[in-house]
Image (cartoon, rainbow, N blue to C red; front, side, top):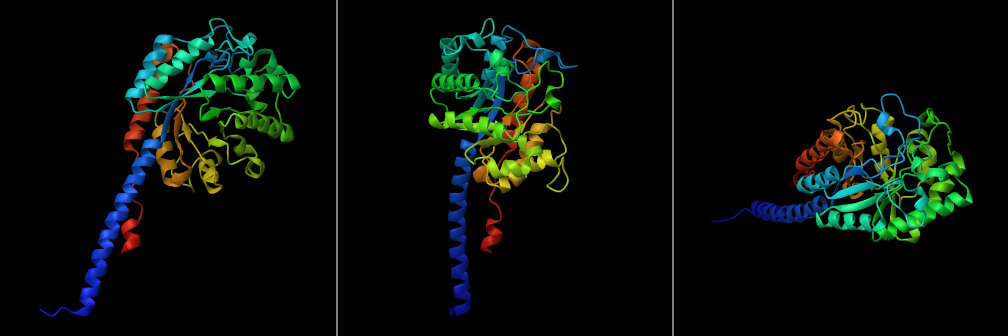
Length: 354
């Protein structure tokens, strides 16, 4: 039977494209599988909860400073197991004054963990398949844990203490790949109930941030921070913030929708960071809305390029105490649900080919 030359070429090209599409799709699936495997699904837990000053805020009494460790070890163990069983792979630990640092034991509260105790807990965490990441918040709105040094900000003694603590924690954690520096909410408004309000502005804020970054850089550890400085200082942020600093924009509301219709500067900061090429771990919380985390994941999956989306972080913002067990459990369940729903998909491949 005579075959029309045009039909032969068409059929051959179509078959070749089909094979190419199949091969590309398989490659894409492998790439997606690796990305999904490497994606961070983290949760923040507090060893210390002394980030606020010693004057209780209305309706937020749990933020009141305590000179002793507020921590339930049974709950801690249960939460770690639940995180591992739920598919989470990272726990960010807010250490604060909950450790008897060898370099500065004067910071520790009563019943703080010894360094050997912390190291044994880190081994337990890793054995569960979770990656432990340290957090020390150096924002002046959240540094009550620093004790007397919280009132000596930007002095030579302050820099010496910060360097000592960062270096010691890096050693305790066996050089973690990330270190969370906090640096959020350093405004007068956030310190309106404090007896002493300290707010760094302009060049001194950047000087101190660069100092902390450089200390971690000397240990080959990547700095990680909250991104809300961007909300109030957009031009300065994009002009001065190094791309090496991992960003966590956070939003705990439910007004997402799309880029044109959302909670403006809070939500669009996810987009702005992506547009400027910053790596991100977007952050949500069940602090005010149980729906937030899933909605945040869905929004960021849609708008953040995969090469800059390192994962997601949940932040319950409650002490690790038995009275908050259900709140912590719900936070983990929300991550589990969002993780199960999450998938990349092949975007536009068949359209591009045909």
